[in-house]
Length: 250
Ligand code: 13P
Image: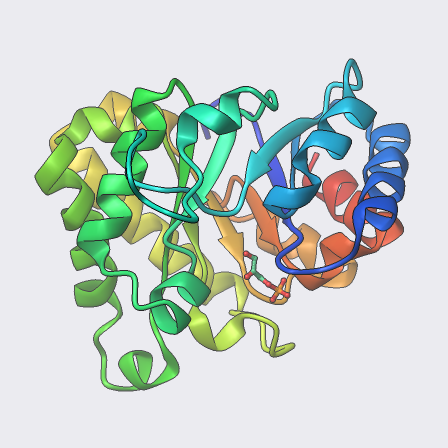
């Protein structure tokens, strides 16, 4: 076991309005006890209000996506540097919904991760396989390729200030959680791959699990050696459930 500090991140996806987001943020801020890093990721439009609401609470703020570009004629994009202004510390890149619904390639995801780091923020790089890929024994190849895309452009240095989130696509929002053993196997594979290049980096690398994490399955998942916390979707929209998951992680 190492001394990796645990992290629980709430990905609020496309939900709520300003008032609901601030209320949720306030409840999480009030209930978290600082034993783990707790990050909340509201939608872009709610970042300003949520940022003000949680100021001084110890909660961390993140975004769910960003542009790979720093500035220029890219209508509709949000640059990582703009997120710094809201006191964001993290940006999720390569969520499977971005990859599948918005056709983001691993190369684009890697360039976003690099842009996030250039702005002084920490990317949370999501990786994961579909059910079909799992059933055809391609888990290692798929996740390996998703990691390689970032290694290709940023080298191992890109993993020095990054978090990886393993989110099997078949477990997201489906109620079908990976078993603790299935998740641990993939986390160990990710750590070993990074470890072959830089063992100190892999020892420090936080690898979160995401996919139907709930208060009743969090503790078993998070007790696995290579699982350093979670990236939570549905259950992060209810303060009590999210806080129960944070407490299960400590
Ligand atoms: P659920 O927790 O709703 O399965 O979502 C996981 C996720 O996509 C977090 O990014």
